[in-house]
Amino acid sequence: MIGQTPNRLQPRKPRPFDLGVSARWLEARVRPVIRRGPLSSRETALADRIKQLKKEAGSHSPSAPTILKMIPELRMRVDACFLSNPYATELFLDNLYREIIRPGKLRKLLEFYPSQNRVIADKLASGLGLSPDRLFIGNGAIEIIQAILHRFTGDKILVNLPTFSPYHEFVRPDTQVVYNVVRKQDDFQLDIGEYLQTVRREKPDTVVLINPNNPDGGYIPYAKLVAMLEEMREVPNVLVDESFLHFACEGDGFAYRSLTHEIGRFPNLMVVKSMSKDFGVAGIRAGYAVMAPERVKSLLDNGYLWNSSGLAEYFFDLYSRSDFQADYERKRVHYIRHTRRFFKALTTLPGVHVYPSHANFALVELRRDDLTAEDLICRLLVRRGVYARACDDKKGLEPGKFIRVASRTRSENRYILRALKEALRS
Image (tube, rainbow, N blue to C red; front, side, top):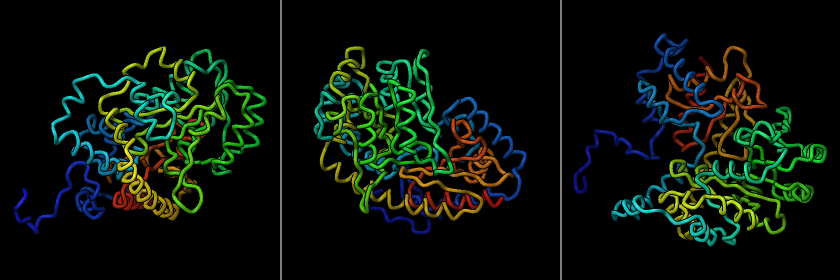
């Protein structure tokens, strides 16, 4: 309590959402349950339950809260499956507490209808420097993806592999999906010449590019992407997902370049942005898309009137403010610095290959035959409380060989590295 002398003999225990948790504290908390060698019968039973939950989740991993609810015996320490900037999450939560919760404004935010889609778009437009009639607000990026695929995509869509699965899972039944497979021997980098040849040959009405791509973090530089758009003017729909763009820096600094200001030049372009990747606010469902005004009108005329929550509206209000943007920029750069060090350290682990990434996650290939990706994920979670993602369900990746690891805070990244070293050594 305020005014009391702290007990210096007792280490401070972090509060919920405390991002100052040290790796040493985590190590001390979990050390008593660490074992080496094969999993015990109890640990094997826990691993089997984890595998069953993953099977039930389909092509997506079960969330950390779901796992802990269904397997309460587990003690999860780090969620390296969820892709977000935890420093920005803390920034949002601090503002939410100071401006909404502490003044007693939460009830108003939850009790009444939020503003309509156009009103929220008008607020956000000023912060993005865009015309509000080009903005469509979504209940998370996934709602926008499905809306675009169902409203604008016709007979054929071209999707790269590996990629975010909803782009081929959520198409209409009458839409043909054509895959362009990027090769691991090329570090999953897109061969632009081959890609454009495929576009000309297949003549899809929709092409999808995730930049940086999920799950490998591959990135197409801005100038090359604009040149591709010039070559694809005849494609009715070019959908570019920039959900991880804030982690992709061009040049020596930390600047990123968005295509959102190219919509006037390329009316067939649609840019999608998820906010959960930057801020870790997946629970409030906040995303937006930038597209030609007639496309926005087409979507709004067919629903999406009150598709945002009150919390999402507050987030967009906050995100549009210059003072918050300045605070966020510092958190973004801080996180990228730690992420780069983390990725460099990952490359030193034995028996794995880490692919170059411009996102906040790394695709890691196991180059050994005595350990599968699924077994490694279970070992990490059961033994060390580290939750990462096995990529067995990702089309275009060899089953059993790939995991995806998200960058977290500096101390959590150190803990992930120690956990991986031990799991690979075992």
